[in-house]
Length: 170
Image (tube, rainbow, N blue to C red):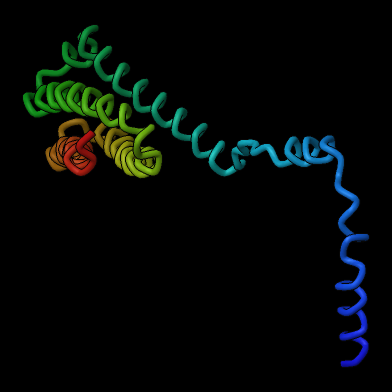
């Protein structure tokens, strides 16, 4: 303990000699330039953004493709099955509704960035299920349960985007 007191006494006695040196102003400028905050975007968030853009492009392509079938009349003119006609009309209606509401949700992505991943993940899952149902329908074109499941899938998509719009209120 005595050595600590000796050092302390020495510092107190020679304090003025320690304070005569100050750093040059250039040092503070160098320190300030090194401490500038740089925005770093993590690889994960970049990948999520790219995946979101791809998902939006896929959904938009699917909607455009579905409405293209109706405008060309290929499938609608080939079938006389009223249930299949109902499915085609339902696809067009729900695709239009979901697409317009999805555009409203996309406006809120900047305010709620976490929303983008949730919405697109859910819509991609429903789209995957819909593709499976569509394959089943091509195998058995007059299967009423498959047609009903496809319409139900479209309703789920619409309910999903409606629910998201109610939650975010932007």
